[in-house]
Length: 172
Image (cartoon, rainbow, N blue to C red):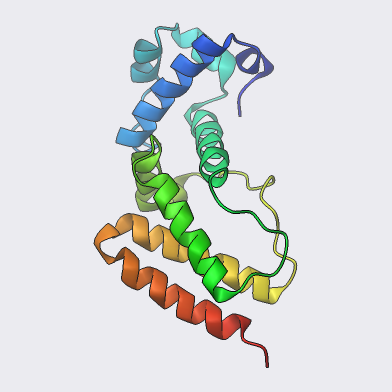
């Protein structure tokens, strides 16, 4: 996670560093990322990087969380129980927000490689209230992951997820 020093940087410098992180982590897994490339692109000293972040995993986690916040801003948010159709719409909205965004390559690489290397903290994410909600969340996230990895199958993946959520949310 970032230090207070990083969070207190002027916006232009912070933006330049975040752009450098985005470039690095969109093109290299966490295990292949290099502080040297990040600091060169950002125009900062190597020591400054370690003043701002504990390590590459901390920098990645920060960037990933920023991306998730930004992407989720574009999605209809509801605190009530949704229908299967509304969940399908939210999955599509999420994928549309990722595709064509500056975070598209970051998210694809996250699901291909980085998800197994770094477990970003989801402490800010709302937790499911019950088993049904948990099931919908797992199905939705898996559909998003599969769709980002195989964009040519997105429509079929979303429909399969919709059918599973419809069964899960069906009133007995």
